[in-house]
Image (cartoon, rainbow, N blue to C red):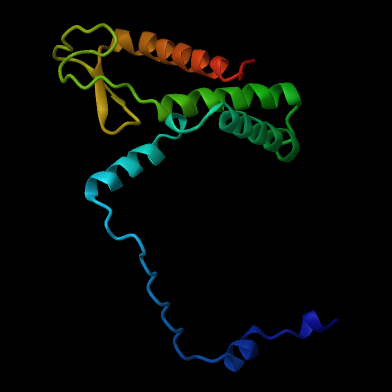
Length: 156
């Protein structure tokens, strides 16, 4: 076989060692975009559920379930459960808690006091909650996600 006689060093010696040519810069046709319009575009593309419709969520769900079943070797039921959980988490990440009042717990609306816990907010930064409010807040968010997904026809 010829692959047994392959010498990578000989191949490298045959190659041209001159540096690669740099690419030409892209031509911008529409250069009148303002920073505000770019910020709006970034905000729209950052949170996909805000621009995804039910068909997009269905495609995402079925693609993930198919991959989990065929490539991951899961049963269809297990693939559906895993994919549903993935959709719940994805929805929560794409729809961050809008609460921005510092020092106020977004779950109970009371002052956080001196011992709050930090919870990452996918919208950027973090939120401060009472330790007793973390589980109810997560449960509420999961219910919101489930309701939104059911509204798009995705449920277990």
